[in-house]
Every structure is written in structure tokens, then in C-alpha cells.
Length: 271
Ligand code: DGL
Image (cartoon, rainbow, N blue to C red; front, side, top):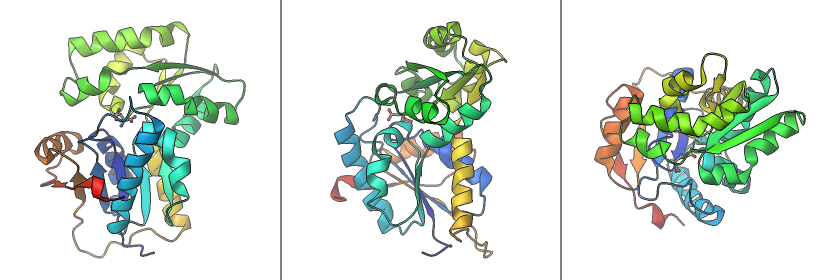
């Protein structure tokens, strides 16, 4: 495996850009190949079989880009398909759920953790399993927040309606006295200030993307796969399954630089 090869990052759509953003911050020398499944989003309300099928096609596509590692940026796909697909690739593959659970366990003082995410993620119970493996005494309180992804994609990051909906969703978790909350969906870090306002300063907000980029960095070091800057400017590549123009616009607002272009791929042809 060539250490100069790119890192593959994929998500059900736009949200995984919050994970790509953390990887870019943590490892500015690394090149990223991003795939967003914008034609088939959301994954959060789909079955495991469907998400596995879609994710396998994306992994097959990323293999053709000769990536040296794969990050499953989508919480839902990380929860449901990571184990199955890991055996099908010969490069390191990590998801966001395990690192998110680990950070939450390290953070909680009162052993009461809240988990927010899509319906499929919450129903999978995977965050609960990981957290309990690390500390069986921790109590986990979950809440699916299906209305938040569309609001984020609409650009309503700082809006009274969004604040009201976040308040409704988080009320139960607040009442349970959680001191740590996992933002277990790619989109929620973009609502961080709203979550903060609703929950107050005393609740630690966990963005699994931070710890994921740390873990990725460690793996690349251990496997001798860290890219050595060679003076050529980095050009990240972005691929989608639909509507590249909308993706470019959203990516520019999340990444804070003009990504130039995104290429539309017929992802259903990849297996
Ligand atoms: N990317 C998904 C996640 O993090 C959210 C959007 C979707 O439902 O596909 O779970």
C-alpha cells in the first residue's frame, strides 16, 4: 500500500463532510477522496440489508480510487455495516461509532450518557453496546431526531424553528440528567451551538468525528501509511450519486473553502 495514496471517506450524503473537515484539520497533509450517496440519502430510515448493499458499492468504488484507508463517516452505516464490510477490504477501515462511544465514556462523571442520531442508529443499539462494554454501570438514554438532518440541509443552522425542535428532542435527555451527549449523526455538529444553548454548559457534547480523526491518524502512523508532503498541492476529490451542484454549495459552507467541483458517479454499477 502506498503511503501517498488518498484516504477514502464516505457518507449517505452531505453530512459526512463534518468528518472530512476534522480529518483535514487533524491531518492537513493527507488527500481525501469523498463519496456522498446523495441520490439514496437518507440511510437513517433504511434497513440494514439496504445500507449494507449501498455501502458495499461505495467501498467497491473507493477501491478503484486506490485508497489506503476507509472512513465510514456515516453513524448509521458505521453502526450497521462496519463489521461485515471490514472483512472485504485489505486496507484499514474505521467508523465513527466506536471512537464516539469511547470519548463519551471518558467524559461522563455521573455515568449518564445521552445518544442522539437517526432512527436506524438508535434502533441498532450499537452505541449502548459499545458504551456498556467499556463500563457496564453507565446508563444510556437514546433519542432519535429525524427532523434535524433536513433542517441542517436546508441551511437552518441558526433558526428559531430549529431551536424549538432541538429543545423538544432533547427535553427527555435533559430530564434524565445526562452529563454527556453524543451527537451521533453527521449533521448534528453543525447544530452544536443550538445543542449547547438548549442543554447548557454543564453537558459535554461529543462529536465522534474528533476522536475518529485521532484514531485514523494513529492507525496511519502504526501502518507506516502517513503521507509525506512532496510539495505538490493537495487536491481532494469529491464524488456524489446525484446533484453535484448542491453538494458543492453545501461543501463550501461546511469546509470553508471552494471545493471546485464534485463528480457524479453511477454508484449502482459498482456491485
Ligand atoms: N449520515 C447519517 C448518519 O450519520 C445521517 C443522514 C442519513 O440518514 O443518511 O447517521
